Image (cartoon, rainbow, N blue to C red; front, side, top):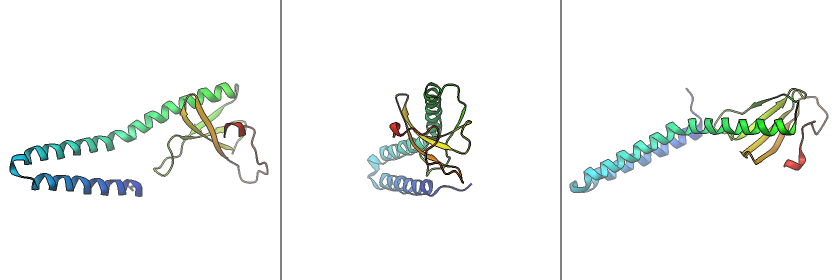
Length: 143
């Protein structure tokens, strides 16, 4: 398993922070040491829960935003078929969804979905060899 550099940096800083927290908890006077260790352990559990829950939360949010985009496209382009995907990886925004319409093969339109009322077309890609600058589903009003 290869970790993304952003993930490696997050892990390194988290380990340094938690290590410093436990060192401080051990160095405080004996009367307060037990409380310090409880606090350090509690913070460690919260941080671990954050790292375990975050990917699932993002996937859940993306599924909701995909449904919202599907409803938006169904209203805007009735009778059309499309495929909604997203790029995987930490370097890509998970809320930018790519749409390829079946009537326009090779063209990919990028949509940003904040919520059902705020959906914007933020970009598009042209297939190799196509001389057109604007596709059939290009929406400059939405930029």
